[in-house]
Length: 322
Image 1: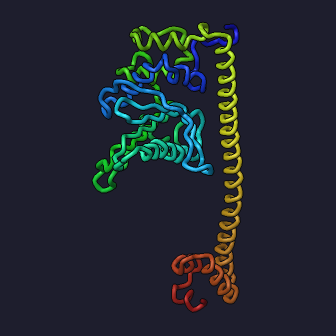
Image 2: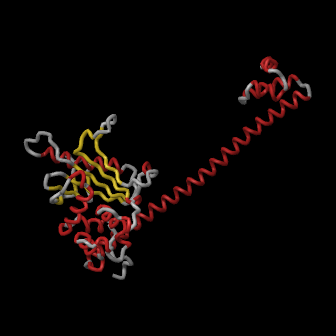
């Protein structure tokens, strides 16, 4: 495959992500990933089934939602798995909106008594939320409905999990858990030229076989090539916009700084000029002129004590000139 320098597909492309996690023969890859992600939350998920990813609203005017992956486990609990390549202004709103579809779905059952099955929305992000940038070591966010005063979970059947992948910077020899290994693979797969020795287990060996571009059919190669091109164009556009925004921000900051500097310089110049005028006015015995200057000094915010010190007049004498 002379078109590609890399050996394995990029999981952050639409085709790459769905090839690894969204095809029936590879369902065990997604199952293993979810089990590691939700180990404490779920225990062991025995099986999952894919559900149609396009969801329609209740009426023709409702907006629709198209999930990257949508599946359910043997208990009927739903899992939305989203891969987000670039920063989106209202992405959190979007994930909340997406969660409403599997909730409303359950209302269509006969004799429904309002008991809901759990819904999990999982977002794998190739960016960091602006509000999280200072938390450089925290890349996973688990969100539920919580009481503000007690910090206790108020409702545990609606869960949002956000994985900010740029913050996951562990090297191969630092991986401590199988979940670490999954995150390392998702972030670095296209940069590897072989399976690491520490990942020589059946599930990861299958993933690397599935991801090997040389084993693709010509049709699969074309599909991946188109998806990779879109990913690179999108990333390049985003990086360019970010760079332009930074440059414009610097330029604007310099301009504002210069303008503010000029304003402050003029203000300080006037203030110093008035101070000098006070000194000169007193020196020359021009009482009338001094009185006017004292009033102007007050308008600029000088204190009585400061004017008294500059003029040599007592504070009472300064007050008499006001």
